[in-house]
Amino acid sequence: GWISFRSSLYYMSKENKSWIQSQDDCIKKSANLVIIKSREEQDFIELLRRGKSAWIGLTNQIKEGLWTWVDGTPLQTPFWWTREPNNQNGDENCVETGYRPDDGRPVVDVLNTWNDNTCSAKIFYICEK
Image (tube, rainbow, N blue to C red; front, side, top):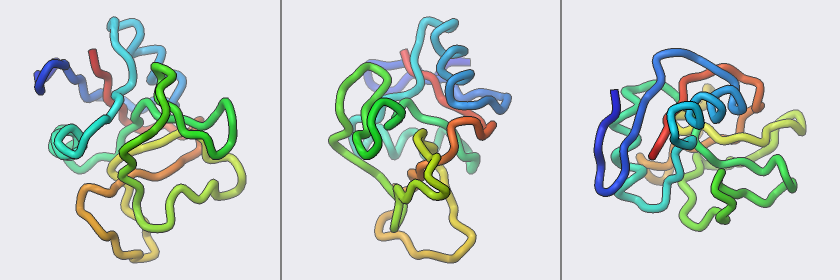
C-alpha cells in the first residue's frame, strides 16, 4: 500500500518494470515516479526501498546531461554514487536509487545511491502522490 511521509504518499512496487512502464503505472495510480527534493526525503526513500534498487522520476532523455524530474523541474539536490552519472555505453538516461557498484567504489555519503541506468532495465520503482 501507500506510505505517508510529510505531505506526500509513496508506493514501493512489488514488480519490476522499465522506467517508462514504471511511470505509466504510477500515472494509473494518479501519481508519478518519486521526485526527491531533500535529504530527508532521500533518507525516507532509502528505508522504503528495503535494499532493492528502484526507479525514481529523474531522466535526461530530453537532453543529454540535463537531468529533469517528471514534473519538468531541474535536478537541484543530487544523491549520485561516486563517479555517477557516467552514461555507460552511451545509453543510461534514467535514474535508480539503491545502486551498489560491483567494483567496490567507496561512497562519500550513505544516502548517495543514485545511478544512471538504461531506461529499458526492469527493476522496482517508487511512486509518489
